[in-house]
Every structure is written in C-alpha cells, then in structure tokens.
Image (cartoon, rainbow, N blue to C red; front, side, top):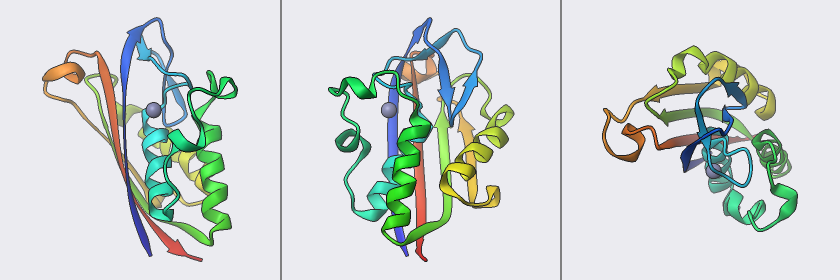
Length: 157
Ligand code: ZN
C-alpha cells in the first residue's frame, strides 16, 4: 500500500469560470490559472503522484507549456490515472477537503465523486469530498482564494 497527500491553492478573480472536481459551478469568481485551475483535481493528482513517488503535476504539465493553456484538469487526472495503472496500483480510498466561503460544496460533492470515480476507475464509495469555510479569515475568508487538500491510499493490484 502507498499513501500520498496533495495540496493546491488558486487566487479567485471576477469573470473566470469556477470548475471544481470537474463540475462547472455558477459563480461570480473563478480561479486565476494557466489551466482551468481546478484546485480539487490538482490536489488529487498531486496526492496520487506523491504516493507513486512520481513528483507532481507542475513537473508533468508545466505552465510554461502553451499546450496546457486553458486545458481541462480532467485530462491531467486522466493521465495520472493511466500512470497509476501502469505502475500496477489502483485506488484504495481518497479523502478531500475544499476550503472556500462559497459555493456550498455539499450541493456538488456527489457530482464530483461521480466524475472522479470515472476517471480513477473506482466506486464512489471509495471517494469522499467535503467542504469547509475559512470562517471569514484571511484571503480564503474574503473570497479571494480557494484551496484543496487530498489524501490518498493506493493498493498494489
Ligand atoms: Zn492548481
């Protein structure tokens, strides 16, 4: 068995599209990023790569590469999932936290789990996605940033 942790943060700006866990969510603000800035999928990708001892998504999909501009993070996690499979591992379980003042994550967590489960070829029961607010503290509390953490357990197939 292997464990991994992942973390991501993006600044939120008006007029950007908010995508979380592959779900497009109505919002006045969205992440400032080279890709679609999906903090949840970035944290999960990093957690899996970490468990495999394969570095991180910044190394795999550099933001200096024009090919990654505006790219869907579903593709990033898809590539990470293929690497996990090639290395002979499958998902044991995955737990995640999204820290943001809005939207309410519980409204979208089932949809996110469905998308993530499809990409990682596992059941929804192996995935947990929860939301927390920052209690109005700091940049996240002011609605100027969004953060995600992920912890993953991989099992040898
Ligand atoms: Zn990111």
